[in-house]
Image 1 (tube, rainbow, N blue to C red):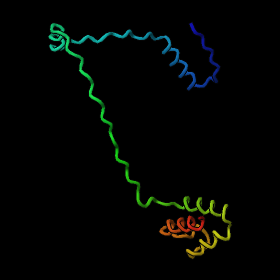
Image 2: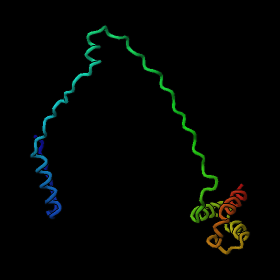
Image 3: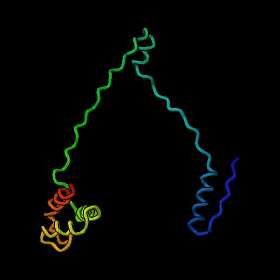
Amino acid sequence: MTQITLTLDLTSENLNLLHSLINAMNQKPEPEQPVVTEPDKQEKTAKSKKPAKPVEPEPETPVIEEPKPEPENPKITFSDIRAAAYAFQQTKGQPRLKKIIDKYNAEKISAIPEDKYSAFLADLEADNE
């Protein structure tokens, strides 16, 4: 027999869990009873006849899934342009970033209109090359 030692703070919740554990351990599992089914008529006749040649399984044909088309214009969020601008600033510097932001008549990144996000990212990438 295996012995388990538990150390718990005695709360009502832990006490309930402990009672459940003890009850579960004291219950004996019911023995599994085999399922008895009537054999099919075909099985009965198959036993009386000669054994048939084994049927070779058909080769599986691979299922080719067509790639799902990616959305043409995925939604670009402010977080996307902020992350791209930060990375650009780290490599190219603040003055070059400010020059691109000024192109959109904005004082800061958050002032760039949402409909210009993709163009702003394209400008960052073009100037990064």
